[in-house]
Amino acid sequence: MKKTVEWYDWIWDPVWGCTLGCDFCSSRRYAKKMAGELTKHEMVFRKDNGFSIDGKVIDDFYNSVYNFRPTSVLHRTPPAIPRDVKRILVNQMSDIWDWGAEDTQKYLDIIKKDTEHIYFIMTSLPNVYYTKPFEKYIRGENIANLWFGVTATCNNEISTFQDHLSFLKPNKTFLSIEPANEKIDVSLLDREYVDWIIVGSETGNRRNRVVPKKDWFNDLMNQYGDILYMKDSLQILYGDSIIKRMPNEIG
Image (cartoon, rainbow, N blue to C red; front, side, top):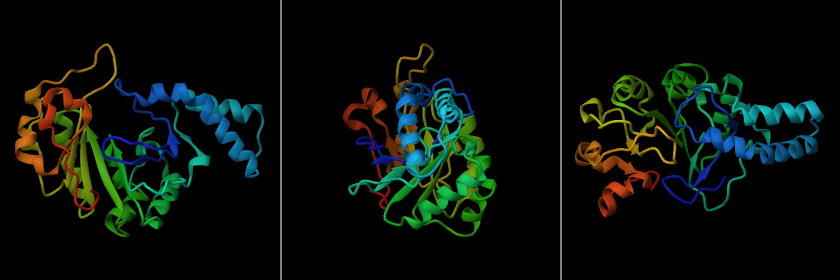
């Protein structure tokens, strides 16, 4: 899936579906919209590659995607990456928490072998990084072209996740604060453990969505502006003063 805005060039979603049930999740709505088309492409791929296809297989795959249950998408693994792509977000339609050890190993192997691109993975449940096979790569076989991320929405999560960011070093790490639900307390952050910070607000028209205030991000801009990327959702608050810093390794 090609992406032409924000901080990544392309999206690779080898898994669709998530068990976390976040109220603000837009991917769940997108999965309902795309379940039919995704199923059509998946069944063509499976048929062409010798898989057994019948009505039950088709229905099970469609229902799994539509209901946003974690579902491996075979026709997107490995990804067919366009030539002009450099930065790849791996899991917009899932959380790596739900991947399972076997699939995780497969995806990490693909990433490690593809040294021409830079990959980004992130999770709302960073305890997953202590499990196999993630720990193998974090503490041993470093994947130089992979950035490990955690995503938070509030200060309590930011505070809790600092220990996990510390565990991930010396790998490249990033913190995604999106959607931000309150004023960011920068005293909870530690430059020693985070190489890049991405921040944004909730988009869409959800009835109870949180609308940020401008002063929520002032301290973050003043103290971490050199490693800060503010998403387009904050443009309405900051106009031309919005910060969009990219690390030198990926810029």
